[in-house]
Length: 534
Image 1 (spheres, one colour):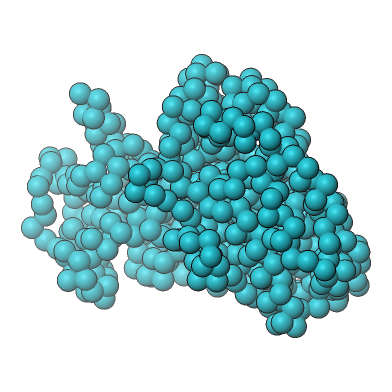
Image 2 (tube, rainbow, N blue to C red; image 1 turned 180 degrees about the vertical axis):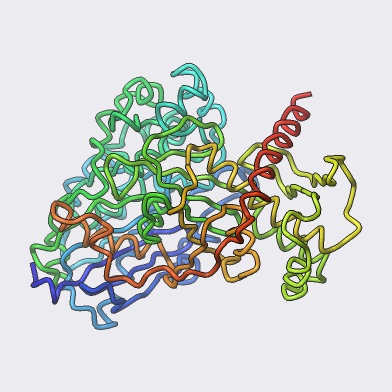
């Protein structure tokens, strides 16, 4: 390996729409960064948004496996043109969209092990896959298979207790089961099943790379506590599936040296290590440098919460995954579909589409909103499963059709959304304490007034990170950490990075105002869910 002062680290993210890559030095300075856009740079695969869908089967969403291979060919060439000295790269890691599956045909391992450095990867792997279109996380065509997996263990609660999630259509187990049912010959011809993450690692390793614990947690097949595949779930999915999966490994594992293909074609050092790749959500947790006691809140088209947990808690509304940074810890992930698009709808109706006016309305209303409280759902929510509709309440907790004041409407939207985020974080077992930090990211994190409400609702300071592309950066950080994990914790490795920027502090009376609102939210949600059952 190169001397530490000269070493660099390569991080990648095989996301839905593009492949991104970054090279950082030993002090975490970004040296080079580039990307390959699947739709624009690889038009021959005819994807839209990086995936393939048809009007006949809108719930079936796939991506051409070979497209990801060709994208790797392209991005390495682009990095070389940028002047990257691959000989200084000490370790490589990365992430990929979670839940997608790749099916290697019989004989593919031998092809991987004998890659010819004179040829492109995609030329040599063109016939390597028994299923040419990989199911992705956007696929929702496996409802029957999810129910079948839940029945194996005695219901959705039991499946969630063991694997971290109830049966989800996008999860890998149900997708593998469907492939076996619909394409039995292709399944029979499958030598190995990979997730997109360890498929990507396999390309660098020149052999089948193991699945890491964090991404294995997104399959509905993996026992979170025992860190092993559950045989009864594997058997329910497809015959001989156990023989087609590697044992899962710690997310910080060194899975092997880089393939000779890369040392000869690009000049990588023989000692360059491949570190286990993980899913994009665990990768983002690393990229956002979350620590114990932190909450990451991503405010995007959908809002997402990432939590650091010591013990997994059974829930039907979110996901528990193994923590990619600490082997005996866990991470929780909560998704809320009604995020920025819902905020934009109320902005358009109350503020004429102008964010500045929206912010003035929000700022002109006192915290607590005179006792008014509302929940807005453009579409059926994930957490919890409330159907679309707007639910407004006055200070007497009476239902009303609309608010007479635009100011009240705007504050009701923001407070309702953020109170829900806190309530579900607590229901997951997260304890908000004096050292809690809220790390805000996503499009709406540029709005300081929304972040002030977040600080008050959580009664915790809100920070923002300057770093974008957290999953890609997480790959580079994890690559370095894996080399020194026996000596240093992840937090020690990244201590040279600038601290997150403190943006908002809660007001002194925040707890007095918002803790009763969290309890009120729980009562309202129970009523709404009970009404749906009638």
